[in-house]
Length: 71
Image (cartoon, rainbow, N blue to C red):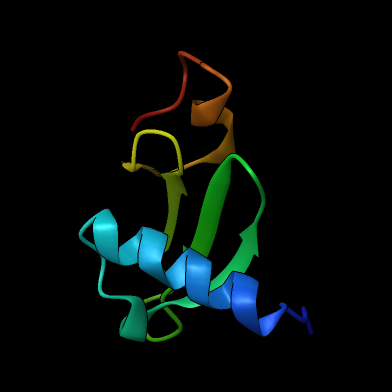
């Protein structure tokens, strides 16, 4: 199990909401200074939101500019 600090978890949820994602439907998997990675437990959909732009991407490689990955 991954433990997340309560204050940082709230920050990550705000980022998801600002990006247009219903944070109640997603569990925060990981977040750092660059992105928030969340998973919908029901559908198994994974989303990643870049904090600087609030852009939703599907893969961490997309944040690194990997041209082989879809956004």
